[in-house]
Image (cartoon, rainbow, N blue to C red; front, side):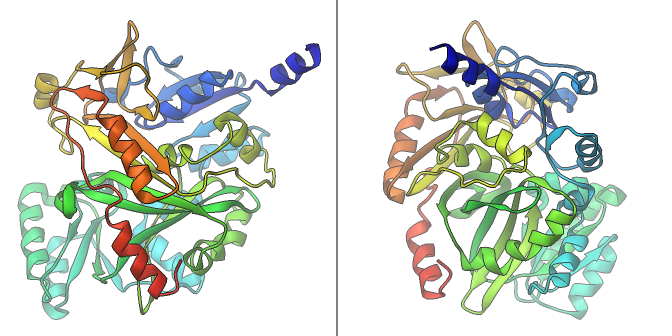
Length: 435
């Protein structure tokens, strides 16, 4: 009895989470419930209320560096300080200046893919709308318009053209010029390639990838059947696998480079694949949201212990469920738009109600907790993520939507087809030898 208590106490750690928008709240709360001490800092001012009542919050994370056993940076942009803390001897999960640049500078990401002898889709970066329009007129084709830098966080600005001569992209560029002027920043035009969009992701311990790896299918549009505005993500389906031709053709080739930069964390590469090959699109060199929360539904070990092993540079096999995991956001107005007046009128402090006892598979997003009630806060309208898992995609979907039916959020909306693409996508991937 005494020995087991000592063992338990020796595993209890102090986790300091440094968050951009509070997206890691559910991970922080989970680690707290596992018996560890946690503190959460949120940088974005409108998001400061997120997490109150769930976990201890701090206003200046730097004052708690000495307190922490492990520091977790949940977003890009902290790479320099994360690397400095690692060099000082702290256990840190987060990016580096190199991996930050992979995600934030699309041009750099593409050049690094070429450097690692990975085939890329032709693309070109622009700083003015007129130059981009002239380029399309001289090189007519279908294009994808992708903002770069900080503007890429506004997912509704991404535009996927369908016209073979690029006329629809030209119209969008002219509209952006009127509405944004010189404030849009740099952007990229990428040749559009048809196929299955799939992401390959893995955790990296500073030296090597941790297996199994994760295969993810994002559902980015607001409405079912990929209609409406791009939101970044409305839901995701995924599975874990020991090996993948897509992983071997892309991320695995970055192993030595990531080790050289002592990267510790999660990295994802989004690709378009078809019968002609694998075409990487962009990196996410951090936790993905809601990806990490859906991954948690498939991880069979405590999150605190897992992150401790990862930050410590241990070589281990991640214990995961067989089958599939799915997750869907329940959102409220004005999502996916930024409209403070609408948010305050329809959504701020709205209560998340559960028909039955039990919140299994319901993950708090932009919430605070008051008198054991979950209230919506922040300013974007992302209320909760609901997950499910099963041996088949249908089983996972059934669990998730049963759980969604237990949640009542006034004015809430969500997609009803997360995972439906799998039957068609899997057939294509098998036929191309990519599963």
